[in-house]
Image (cartoon, rainbow, N blue to C red; front, side):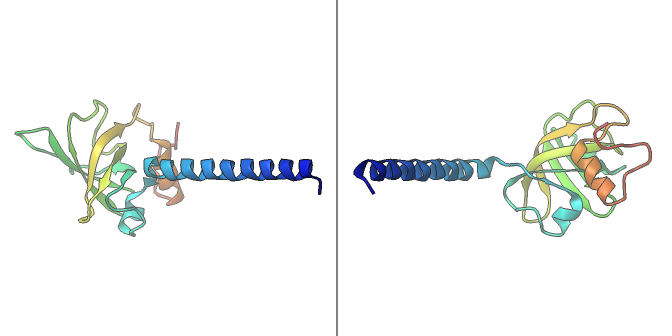
Length: 151
């Protein structure tokens, strides 16, 4: 091997190592910023990480919304018609939030199985359901009549 070829090979290997290092560091930095979606059944089965930011969704159970009269705290239950998940939220709920409608919440799951939400996302119109919720309910065969995922 000539010295010029050897120099080119070492330069190429150096670039490959730097590119691999850059990809690895980027992946490591982004892993804590990924919000994975979980259904209440997946959370009940222990698939969701405790103490990390996640997204969860389903249908708000009728009669489950309890508002604190002295603050903006609210508790409600979300279901995928197999399991339920209790949600706590402190803040103003979206205008379109209602019982019996699809919702996605972003927050952290506590050790006691309650999701402490930082954000509540409600539907757009009366037959809309967030795509993640619709797909999960459809896969479980529990999608209510008249609803479609991501309509």
